[in-house]
Image 1 (tube, rainbow, N blue to C red):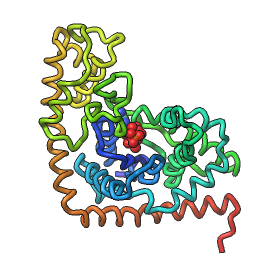
Image 2: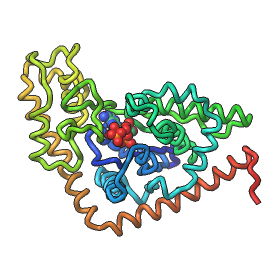
Image 3: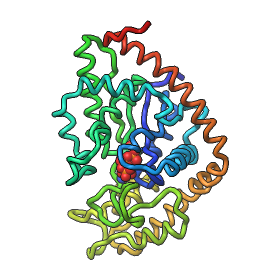
Image 4: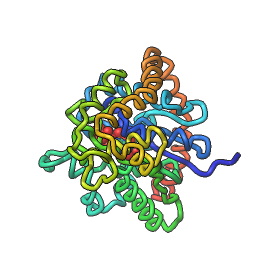
Length: 332
Ligand code: AQP
């Protein structure tokens, strides 16, 4: 069967992957891997846009790969590697950066959120993160990018950057990549605060379900999740915590929001949380067990990354060489 196009996507090895990464991204990759040519990257160069401990970064890189595989990504049929192993990402990011107006970067909300009040001391890498993300995608001429809702703005910028490059060099060189924002849970929120995204870097461990949490921890975290005082789930207006828990339930059980609401129409938070915890334990325990098993053999994981990087590099070098030709770099 001929495949529909080229997918590129990735996760930063900035800590333990969580339910948001799974439902917003990796669960969808598993569905897409048979119909597209897929490149799934562990984006370690993005990770260092905030300080990382080198030993922990290496470990998180392996753990992110192990999580991809444990969630059902087949390392034989897809290219999986870590970003820093392919130098083309950095090279293309520089070239694209020379075509990206600062005004476009100034609109990026993730930079504003992450830099916060410390804008003056924020590093260039954090500011340029979206240009590197555009380079990741365009290096492989990817046509589709499955991401969670939070990455939509960066993907729109990647589309703008691709268009600007094509116009500048008067050639339809880069395909304009399409976002694939799929599933019932495109934005999973913190268990402590339904208005905030679930995130690896949240200070509170209770804000997220990590894909390496034990069954007991998963139960404890859901039972402690923030609730409100309204009984039943018929109306979710101005109830971000209720909506979040129901969204997660729907995504884990592959039911739409309406059916999930109907199921818990007159129930209290306690009932929803108990059922949700059991569903999560059932779905996530096999993933956790497999991650733990895979992590015992780092040689095997490193071998997968090495072979993936070789395949990725072969595509990257070809595309980058064509970019350099267009730009006018002399290759002797
Ligand atoms: N809460 C979320 N809901 C749905 N999708 C999410 N994704 C991340 N959080 C959620 C999706 O997961 C993919 C990889 O994201 P990432 O880890 O590389 O970067 P991030 O979006 O910055 O995630 P975190 O957890 O918030 O990381 P930190 O704390 O390190 O910044 C993307 O497709 C993303 O949309």
